[in-house]
Image (tube, rainbow, N blue to C red; front, side, top):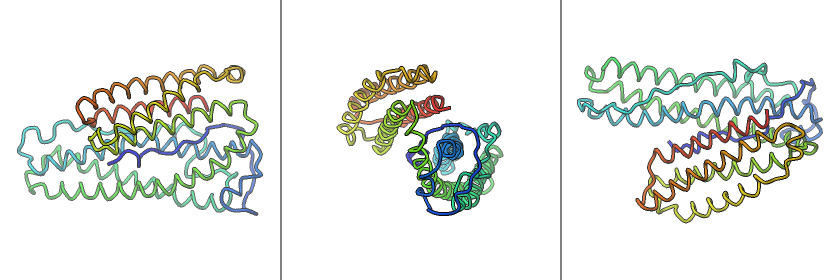
Length: 317
């Protein structure tokens, strides 16, 4: 499964004191938030950022399940092979974000418009149900393999479970796309309000731009399907652009960041961007020599991107 469908969009995480309001009257959609105060906008972003954090933390689990399912399907076709199910890594997911946050994803904040509160009350449980269903189905498949039941039914149930997992994963991705589209619309409208008066505006915009570039680079690598020559020129151009941006953005005046005690977090973010560039450079050189890019290399790029998300969130927490 192409990991670009698994990346959740980013928004600014500006935490603030809860201020109750009712946006049920007047404009709808993003326009409903245009006249919010910074405090109200920040609380909306706190909620949308929680949804993004949850989705991001589920990415590795969903990706691992998709990769394992492909390997298991191949093994089920020839289960007598001693190496049929070698290399399958157990996926893990810990719901730490939800348990540690006072705001709950299933309880939209009051600062949301009535239409959007209704939307999230419907869509969040639907998405959560799809994810839980995926976990349950994968456990059944895992237990099926442990019991070696493929010896009894010629892999029939195994293939059926593989199909079910793929169907559920597709539904999960569909639910996520709908949910994240709404999250982005609301977060962007609220973010515009917060950034107007934020002394950290320049840093946040720089990091968001570079996160977008990194994500697009990873997606480009994934789109190659192993054929590096097909993306070589685009990869080199994207790398050069990111390298230039990193050099410029990492040298922004740090006075405001220091006043807000964010200079260390900002430096950490761009240290990780530099690490990404080093990793990407090695992979590009190796792939150019071989003419192909290996799956583990693409995964390492994705892992570096995930680290950048964590660093970005630390800056904004």
